[in-house]
Image 1: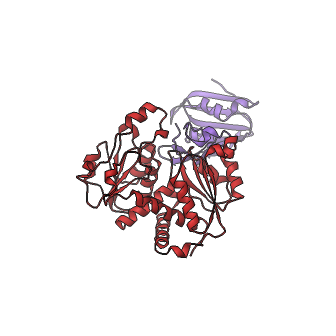
Image 2 (image 1 turned 180 degrees about the vertical axis):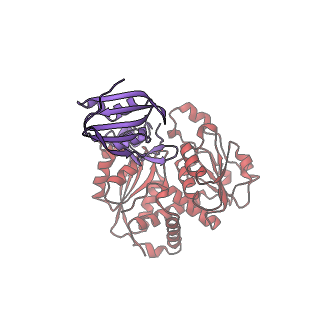
Image 3 (image 1 turned 120 degrees about the vertical axis):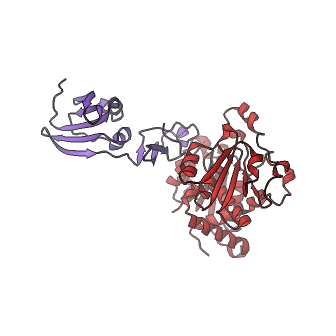
Length: 305
Length: 138
């Protein structure tokens, strides 16, 4: 029984296989419309989320399966003090697969250690968010036709941005990747990601606080939101939230082939004026996320078509 | 300074000077009824100074704790006053409830019954990382 807690739980061969299945789903949706008939997905979201939960639920419905949903810690037994381990054991009795989001880092791992069905980490605090990375990877693949040999700029909250950590980990395994890390000093990439993934793998990277200066080199620009809920201190949030806003002016030096990604939700870090730019890929990313979640559910349930 | 030789028990030798007391507490030697000697700052040809712990009983020593605190120490098993075995110590791959995660965002911060488990992430630099949240042990 497999779970997905960290994107590195999947080998590059498995990532390629998921992308191949997702592409097949895109091209032949009818073939998959009853693939999960009789199966149930439980979505346990102990932290607010709209898109990720709906994406998982849409994915399961499009595979012909059913969904059991818990939305919010305040409406679940967690409010009564039930442990994550117990919740996982109980939900295993009802569902065939679990997608869990939790504010505490490592909670989905605890669930996976105790569940008798596969657990998918749908985001654990500022730590990991592997299915967003699957969405990012499919988007990059569909835009560029490859996952290696490119310069990827990551901008905004690199400290608490869990999608950034997972994407760096995933892309670091492909040939010819270089990173440009663009953030204010306070929101720099954590040392364990920089040293243990980028430095250890001998990957070329630069660190800067200047988005405009970095722009000309980039093939991919991955924007992130400075999230209020990641700060202990409101003052720090207010001071930093507008640090990196992408505007048409900042794109003046960008390549024509640039792809702009964002895990969403966006607040104001990408101007709406950019939405119609052909380089904007963030809404395509949402759709790609659903296809990759479909492919992942099939893989973890051991269903091959 | 004379310390009686032990008949049946354990001698932990080649402990880095200054780490003897830390080991004494972490290994729970303060809970033993038998004689335990901590000898600090003993002259050593190899190490300059070293600490030694002598335990006058054949107890099970937690090798993970020992390996974590000082992987260069050695264990000597003594029977009938003679050394019958010398064990080398390795840096353990996993540590359970030896060190504790200090990250307030880690699941172990709210779920108190969870074991604190750390995995060896870098043998050369002796870095351990929480399996739940990836925070480095301090």
